[in-house]
Structures are given as C-alpha cells and as structure tokens.
Image 1 (spheres, rainbow over the protein chains, first blue to last red):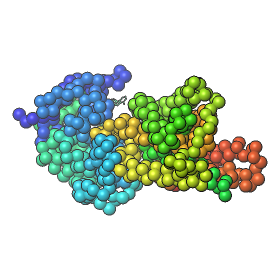
Image 2: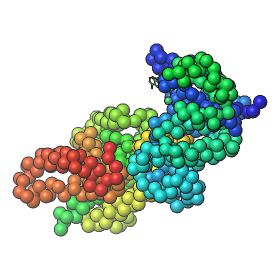
Image 3: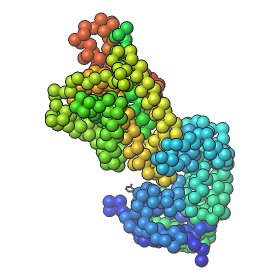
Image 4: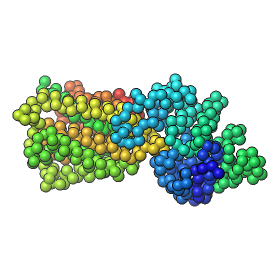
Length: 245
Length: 288
Ligand SMILES: Nc1ncnc2c1ncn2[C@@H]1O[C@H](COP(=O)(O)OP(=O)(O)O)[C@@H](O)[C@H]1O
Ligand SMILES: [Mg+2]
C-alpha cells in the first residue's frame, strides 16, 4: 500500500449541526482523491479542519506514520498541508506579484525584516505567473482581476509552496472558463506527479471522473461511499443522494 | 521667524507620531487607540530620568523608548490575539489605564501637577537650547524614523503586515504566525511614539498627564486618516495640516478663544468631506 495522509475520526459540530460526523479518510501520496457530495455535506469543513483554519472538535491527521492533531493553521503548514479556498481569498489590496512573493518570503520576524523579496526571488514568481497566464497583470492589485483570474492566482500560490506534501483544492474549477480549466488541470496533475497527496473537491463530474484516482462521496457529514470512481458513481445510493438531485 | 520654528518643531513631533501610528493602523489594519499612551511613556520616562536622575537627554530617550517597547511587548502579547473592534477596544482600555497611572502614581509622576523643569538636550557643553538648533535635531530624528519605517514597510515584513490587514486567516494558512508580526509592529510603533514623547517633553519643558489622553489618541487617528493611511507621506501631510490648521483659522480672523473649539469642528468637517469624497485620505493608499 502507498504511504498516505490519513484523517482519523474527524468530528466538527456547529451548534447542533454535525457538519462532519466521525469521518476517517486516507489520501495517498502521488494520487488524486476526489470528494463529491451535495452542498452542505461537509466537504469544505474537512478542508477547514485539516488546514487548521477551523479546527476539528476532535480528530487526528497521520502523515508519514506520525499522528498529529491540527489545532492551528501553523500546525497544518508545518506538516506540509496547504489549501485553496472555495470563495477566493487572495490579498485584494496587494499586487498580483506580492500575492505570490508572500509564498516565498521568510516566515520569521527577523528574517523578513532583513529581506527584500521585491528584488530577489523573481525567477520562481515569473514562472508561476506564466503558468497561469497572469504575466501581464503582475503589477495590478488583485482586486482589479476578474473572478477567474483571482482563482488562478490562488492556484499559482500553491505552485510556489515547494515543501507542501498535501494539497487541498476546494472547488478549484468553479466559475472558470475552458482555457483556465485546462491550466488548472495541468497544474493539479503536475503536483500529483511530484508525489503530493491531492484532495480535489469538485462538482464537475467529467473532471472528477477524469482526474480522481480514488473517489469519496459525502452526504450529511458522513462518508456515503468510496472507491474507484466509475464504480462509486454507479452505486444506486450515490445516484440517489447526489446525481439524482 | 521664531514662531515658524516653533510650528516646525511641533510638526516634526506630530509627524513622528503619525508615521509610527500609521504602520499599525494603515499598514497592518490594527485600529489602535493607545498611541498617546506610548507618547506619554516616552515623555514621562525622559522627563523623570532627566529631572530626577539628572541623565543626559540622549540616553534618557533611549531608555524611555526601550521601556515603551517593553510595556508594549507585555500588553501586545495579549492584544495581538485580538483583531478589529476588539483590538480597538483593548487598546483604548490600555490608554485609559496608562493615563490613570500618570495621574495617580503621584509619588513618581506628581499626578496632575506634572513635571516641570525638563531641560533641552546637550552633547557635552553643546546645548540645543536655541529653538533653531532643537529643530535641526528633531528633524534629524524625524528623518531617521522615516527612513527606518520606510525600510520596515518595504521589507518582506511590511508585506506580511499588509497581508494581515487584508485577510489574517488566509495569511496564517501559509505559515505566518500573525500574532508575532502584530506584536512586533506594536512594539516598534510604541518605541517610535516614545521617541516623539522624549522630544516633546524636552521641548515644552513641562508635562502633565492631560497631553496623553484617549482624546489625543483619537486625534492622532484623525491625523493619519486625513493625511492618508498606509503612506508615510500621508502621515507627514496629516501632521502638517494638524499644525497649520489653527494658524489658518486665526489668519482668517477667528478670535484666539474660539480657535481651539473651531479646530475640532473644522477637523470633523474635513474628515466627513474626506470620507465622502476621498476615503483614502490625501496621500493614502488604503481605505479602512
Ligand atoms: N461557520 C459555520 N457556522 C455554522 N454552520 C456551518 C459553518 N460552516 C459550515 N456550516 C455548516 O456545516 C455544514 C457543512 O458545510 P460545508 O462543509 O461548507 O459543506 P460543503 O460540502 O458544501 O462544502 C453545512 O450544513 C453548513 O451549514
Ligand atoms: Mg464547500
């Protein structure tokens, strides 16, 4: 069996609502695990929990055989977990270039005070920019970009996080035109080939079928089914819960 | 001429306060209502060291600024966990507390009586007692402070501060422990305000607690909002307006006794006009 990142017994409740109800999942490295499910089934809650943005009430993440609770975004970052946001969250009032430079800058106070990323680190940023076709926009404020371009900027940030081991994509294709979809698809496949564990939440069935090596179906905070994509998608209970709607 | 020099000195002190507050409010998005308290700590620290312990101005300034930074560090450890309204409220509370220390620690600060007899700086036998000499000194300090904070905001550190202002949760995802960054800029800002306080104390030679009230902190906020957030030039412009406005009012013929109240009014009107027509302030790069 491939080494993997495992989420064990994750629980998250909001008031009385159990958004994620004792979910255990395994995300193998070098593979894409698709997650589908109706709106409100707890997909984003899993991403928030694993990235420490909204920590789980309980639940443990195993990476490389070590068990770790994730109680803050810093914990997640330290363990090589990175993510994109379903609702785009770029730094609106900063330039496109600065949005990317932030991925490469020093994380410590002293280090960052002595560093001028504006003049160094240019090559990597240029590469990432051209990968998503934003070369021409690098000095514009992110708020000036179209929705699709901001989404691409979010994806480009991931490209610069070399140390990441697990990448959580929360609906990366939503609202994108065909050309952009193609770019994002290539990037996801490239990250997979680098041996990272990819988690892909997506509503577009065609893309899910094509990209996922393993498919998880969520419904009401629990895992309804999982397995090989075309098999899972033909299960009657999956069709009823998801595709039937 | 002497009066112009007096205005220029006041301007330099307010410009220092503006620049050091703007890094917190404009760049990092932390609405701090406690700047006057660090201004006060610098002023009191310098005054006490010079009057009671007969220190030279320059080491007194340094120690006062370090004390300001240490107090900021202790409070900042708690305050940096907050954001938005809670940050504003917490910092306001801090200003109230520090003000009441100035007022009530009578054995040290002499309470409402204040501290008189603070002398001008000197290096050996050279005394900056002429106002023009003092102006040269305070302008040097302003220039150094400006250069320092220009460097801070241009560095990666400054970029992270702006990212915190934009979306603190999102920048945390990329491994930045934002409360340390918020703490660091709070301390740097407080140290800068303390330096301004040192010059203030030495210049007017007498300080009392009422120069360091919450009102004064709010006034400084108005100053940088008017001048422009997230811009050093904006802070300096704000200070210029702050100092020149009362003069302009007097020039158009308002009697002295009304000028003070008029200043508040004109300030209010200016702020409202600005918010309506130019929310970035005069030279700002960012709208709250
Ligand atoms: N911050 C929150 N407060 C209250 N309820 C929430 C919050 N976030 C998510 N939920 C609830 O948790 C459930 C799962 O949401 P989510 O994980 O966003 O679903 P999706 O599968 O569409 O991404 C939903 O019922 C949603 O209403
Ligand atoms: Mg979602």
